[in-house]
Image (tube, rainbow, N blue to C red; front, side, top):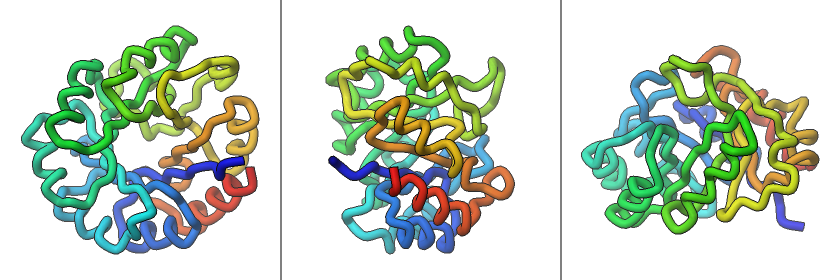
Length: 214
């Protein structure tokens, strides 16, 4: 059985990047979105990603980014994927993938089964789908709020792309989440924080240990 992939998202310090690597996280996420408490500038992202070994994926998380922003991040040479977490339609995802030559992830906000079905539109436009909880209307942030959706909505679903699960995960529920959904990747941000944007080394280690046991 393939090993469960683990993404620690919203990393912003060398200490927490190091903790994620020691805990055998397979993916590290760096948020480049000024409204987020987890925002890192392009130069900071480059510095954080520099010591990460090549077998660990380095994912930039962006919200409706312009080509200028994308070009600046792509120029760092530090990224293995671009995660689009805004309202980017399939056409935009495909254009980004084509122009920058970096695999594209698309986050899908989920409230109903129809949202999961809507992910099929990204077949051929994105490389990976991340199912996340829909944030409240009017929220400045599209994710990272510790919310979860009804995981049973994914039962029997057959996403047309490789996919992962995000939203409201923590050390206590990750095993249940994987059991219900069969997710091949779990993505966590606020669930390993002591305060918004402040990652906890101990929580990162504990979550990775729990997820690895799934």
